[in-house]
Length: 234
Ligand code: UDP
Image 1 (cartoon, helix red, strand yellow):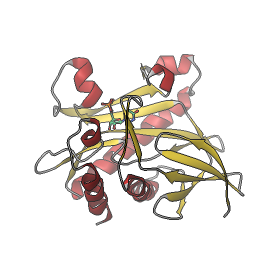
Image 2 (cartoon, rainbow, N blue to C red):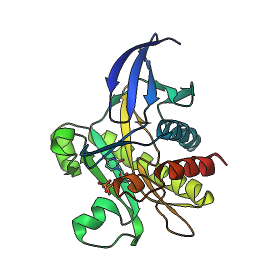
Image 3 (tube, protein in one colour):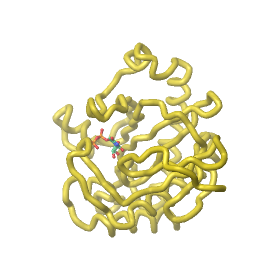
């Protein structure tokens, strides 16, 4: 497979064309941003952690019946993926209150929900990724009713699978954001699953083991990403 010209550079990844029009190569960067790009930095080694971790989780999810864009890992930072058209919806599920949920409703972090929540944000940097209800996503034609039903079904499996998987690694899955794309007209899981996109708390200490260490300047950022990868690889 030949890596051809760069198609796109995002905040955390670059996407390259290949000699197969149905495949891209993603390259994960160490760049980190938070608060809609207001806070910028680097987390040494993050690109490799997020790449390898996403690939492990995506392969597990495939086994559970969730189709993903994963094709083949090329190096610690590069992976061949299916060339999807990303749906402009960030899909967020929460098991425990944290982050924008805690802020929006004026509650503390750490409230364990009896049932996981499900929400969309409109993927639009200029607007700051606003919260979006389902009928608005439909009204704007961002996805069809059928696609949204499929997304809900897959997201529930992603949550249950990842909750169990991370718990075995001593990590509580607090919340996460995933993205879906269309490949041959079918909805498949794309983007990444990593400490950038999931909140993970240590089971014993409740220590934050995710990007909140960077967002909130909690220290040991690099070390924490490496520790998460080490646990996930066990
Ligand atoms: N998240 C993400 N990208 C975003 C917004 C959120 O990956 O642009 C993840 C975030 O890491 C967390 C979950 O989605 O695991 C819920 O985030 P929240 O809505 O609480 O927003 P935040 O506190 O990150 O602003």
